[in-house]
Length: 151
Image (cartoon, rainbow, N blue to C red; front, side, top):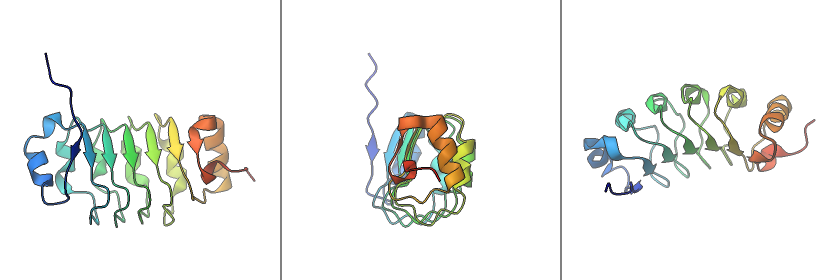
């Protein structure tokens, strides 16, 4: 019987390289609270990664995340990320937490995420046209201020 996969929680970034040494079994990675300013270059080697937590980091960009084709759940909560454009390559992304991401400039990218099923957007000032389309598409699966009245 195969062992159940377990999430890998690393004290970033020191032990990240050890996870990348045997990437095929890593399904979950929690880098929250780390001092990451950018997505680690070798993260695309984690070919089985389905869940990534980058919340509460000084991350300003998501470049490099495009190679995570199996990623289904991403949290960038409370980060200074400016652009969501790299998320367009994540065709399997179903759950996204962008709460308190005050610096995002391109909210319309959310409309181009085909598998997006749940959006957590507490404290986000989504443009009215983006919010309206997301509410139509996701209904009560858009959570937070981003789901406020359309207008």
